[in-house]
Amino acid sequence: NAGVTQTPKFQVLKTGQSMTLQCAQDMNHNSMYWYRQDPGMGLRLIYYSASEGTTDKGEVPNGYNVSRLNKREFSLRLESAAPSQTSVYFCASSETRTGELFFGEGSRLTVL
Amino acid sequence: RKEVEQDPGPFNVPEGATVAFNCTYSNSASQSFFWYRQDCRKEPKLLMSVYSSGNEDGRFTAQLNRASQYISLLIRDSKLSDSATYLCVVNERGAGNMLTFGGGTRLMVKP
Image 1 (cartoon, chains in turn yellow, orange):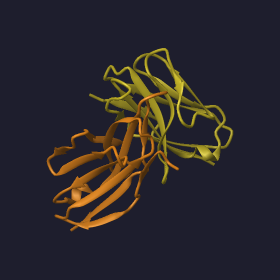
Image 2: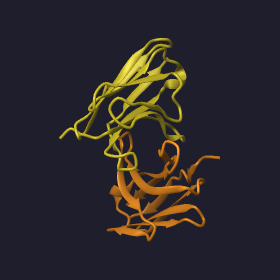
Image 3: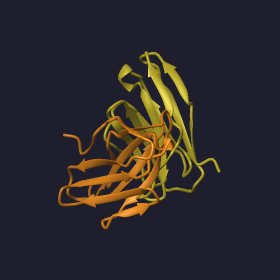
């Protein structure tokens, strides 16, 4: 049972480049999330999807877009990467919005 | 002011010690509370939920104080394997009903 799988695990980008972080869960969860984690800041919610076909902004959505492709997959896109987007990105899923979060292993992104 | 605040630590304790962390939250409408554990360079994982009456899971005890708006985590008989960062998580009823994470408290248990 893989749980939550996110790719890539590491990525280095130049300012202005674009990329997509992929996330898939095999637990049949309705809700999926993208967080970023920076030193001393805790995890901050970028976007979430309460159910297939819906997406909503979180605390720090600027510079990001998301797609809930189906119930399993939720991708995060950086259209024009900036150094301020250097961070560790975590995808998570939960059965309900108030339930336990299951996280992927994280994607470490560096923007030069 | 952050919505969920934790002392970042680190708390350095010897094996076998008892250690306690507090976490304060600013929104009195918060309804659900959790402690997550995060090992270095790993993903967070749920340690325990925090119930109004307090709850215990082995060496771990969680308490909620609604009047003062804080939750606590007590670890008894600390093990080397308890070394990690402990994240306080609060769910606010209302718009979004989203979970808000504290910055985490780092614990280091020494032999």
